[in-house]
Image 1: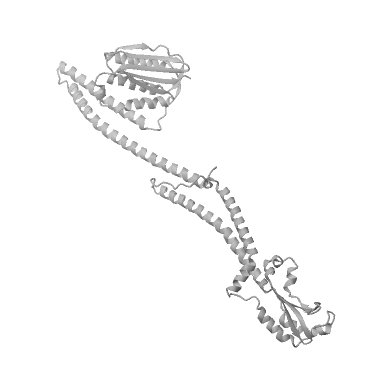
Image 2: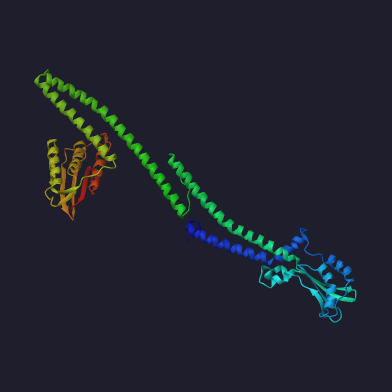
Length: 446
């Protein structure tokens, strides 16, 4: 089961609304049921006095001596005579009923007007405050005898409307509080992402974007942090590549200056014919050696450019597989002249490949240059090209000469070969065991 922080924002909002609505309704139900307790609490605290029974009975007892109670409900004349008494002691919330003390028959009385509201389904009709209304029965001496006076006051019903209003406001505040807290936390997370975007836009790629869970905001935060890391890595790699290229240009320009100066000097001597025939032949050999040095330096520069240039692409087109065989034969002839013995089979080259002819020549030129540099002429160079199972494979094997590990090498040649092979959607395999170094290149046939 996923954690709540990983839920969608809409789902979490709906759940919070349902929960807070339930809490608010339960709170309102609790407050509604305890209206009487709230009214009693206010009265006990001295904030309000709903009805003073003792004071009311004292005044009624004193005033009743001047009035006579009707002998029956039909005695309208005596009813009119006692109306001033009722006017004095009854109001909208207070009522009085007079009964015979001995027979218990109703004589006269007046009900509070508030009871009429109860009958029409108002909020008071269901109010718990009614259950706690003040009622009493007391024998009172009137001018024509002692009668049983029943009084009842609904004065606390005035508390119901403000109480309900306050209860509703409180419940709405509780309901909104949960939603506002959720919205506030969500906006705080959004604000954190905004601050991260501002930092990234200002160039700060070291400060991580705060983790935001698994919801939509969390996904945005995670993707933004991934973008930050990618930008930082790209900038770092670009800086390193720029520095490497700058260092390469500086080194190559310095290294080229010396052989070019020497080569220019020898050619100038030869042009002026100042050397004897024997020295002239030696100068020509030296010129060729310096030209070879220059070629090696320029090849190294191109190889570096290929390795570090990520936008390098190969112009692939349909080529006969014999192109590979031709490149291998040409390089085999070259290393034979250098003193190597070549064995192998390069005749099985049927089929068509998708390749860049210039780049293929560079691949094998690099491989055979490594043989010239590190190979032992005492051992044969094994060369094999074959096509099978929809692929063409070329392999070169040679013995490594003693002290090859001490020869300075940057490894850029093989990295360049691997890069060019990958551009042909091929694979490069390198093995070394028992002093034998083997390189295999595999490409798909069209």
